[in-house]
Image (cartoon, rainbow, N blue to C red; front, top):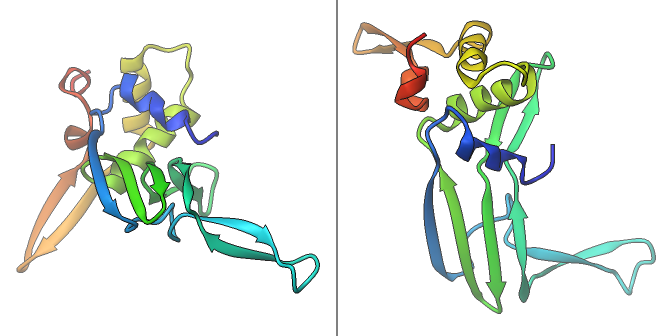
Length: 159
C-alpha cells in the first residue's frame, strides 16, 4: 500500500476525516521525529547522519502493521502532510474520531473485501468479519460499545 492509498477513505462508507492545519515553529514529527534528512557522514564511511530539514515536504501515509495474522491490523499513526521552511512548519492533519477502530476497520474494508461487491455489501462483510464490539467498565458498570455507528456514514448503518 503506498502512502496515498489511505485517501480512498474520502470516497468510502467511512465518515470523512476532518482537515486541520498548523502553522508555527517546527512541532510535529513525520511520524516520530521532527522533519529531517539523511546525509553521508564525512567522518565515517558508510554511515549516515540525520540533520534537521531546512526546506522540504513530507507526505506521511497511514501508519499500520499486522500483529498475529494477516487481518490483525494495528493502527500506529494518522496521515500528515508537512512543509518545513527553515524553522517554520505548515502541517495538514487528517483527523478522525476513534482512530484505532476507524483506521483498522477501513484497512480491513480496503484490503480484505471483494471490490466487485457494492460498498454496502463490503461494509456488511467488514462488520461481520471484523467486528468492532467492545465492553467498557466504568464505576462498576458494564457498557457495550459498537464502534461502527460512530465511524460509518449514516447511509451504511442499516442492512
